[in-house]
Image 1 (tube, one colour):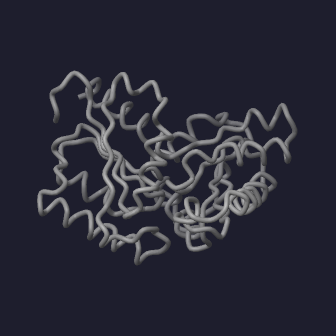
Image 2 (cartoon, rainbow, N blue to C red):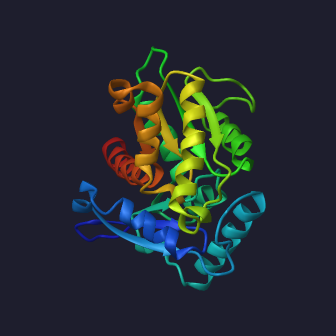
Length: 254
């Protein structure tokens, strides 16, 4: 583990989109954790897909990052904390955990823990995910079940499910803002109307900075007071917070 006064955190983007990495960097630029973390970023090489949209993309991105580690291009032991910034059940979370002493999590896992921590326990409040293409609906729903120790397809009273916009991760940086707004807002509205949503998770690293679209949808569906009370979770921010909490917990309870 690094020994400098600040903890060194790496935001690891497993796709090859530099624009997406820059978007993530901007999303965390004003976090107070900068007093604790020195934040670094990594973008996977061109052999990785520019947008991870399916199982093949997940595996290709895993192989590309592991090759960089094996060649020495990426030195994991330079960091105290590593955030795998792909909103998926990504193999790199477990693989990196097994080959480095750094604390590792993914934006998917961190978002689940964050959502469960902010909704009211014992009430009827729920949380859900808005994401990109339809592939992710089953992938993420099954992933939530697995993370919570449930069987695939089992219902959960607190999880409202995953709602796709039909976009890809890359679209958030290439298509018109108007189209992004329309598609993402429509997916959010469907989620908000599905149950008593208190927390909306942005289910793609490429959504960083688009909280306003989700907030506007909440105000439209729920009205001013209730709409303002909806939490909008960005996975990269949630991931850094979770990494810090995990480091503190391991030190405290070791």
